[in-house]
Length: 286
Image (cartoon, rainbow, N blue to C red):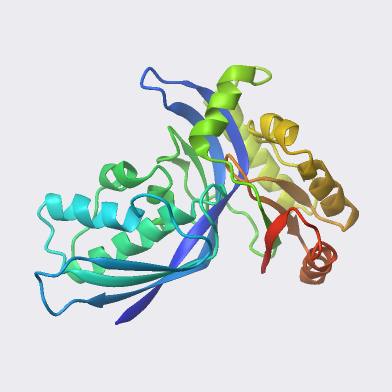
């Protein structure tokens, strides 16, 4: 049996560039990896005739097909020799949190499959599992991505690693498809272009590295989410008052976060939110 850790991500920026004919949206986003967010234990079954078994512990159960089953089925269908497996998945984040945790689970399993097979998975095959999987299975800690999130535009974005991250997971969920439907209905201010969105992200990282208090981070889902869930405004005011350098919503929500230069400030900020009814969980990562 082996234990492997699974990453997630925060979106430091997220700009929606347009809608494709197939209904997907092009975007430009700065991803920050959260390593060791969740974990999996994997054990090979002795009887190859048995079915894979996946047990989920921790956060609320996953509805529908687990993405790990999708990974196994996809690569076996391509001829990869993958044994039948018993997997236990320890979840930190529920679905609809905007942290890419499910894609992180898939990325971790794909990396394990690469290790036991001695083969490398193509980027397009990773993207067929989930848009965030190519980044989450890459060596990059921080990167600017395009397309639907699967294409790395700038890989080695040099965000200083000293920021402590306070992550709030509220009790409501925000699923990507529904969030895009709201954006399509209400629209976004202005027209975004990839070059400008990419430069915006690079300028923001430069400002953070210089110690600036950059405040609210740009995310084109913010307007519709704050309109639907006014508690975000309370969270953001709290982050500002407790000395955060930056704060915002991750992906299409529901999670929001703040970056602090001082770990002690992050922990004090988190402690002050302990009894807030709307919050499901609070996590601080250094």
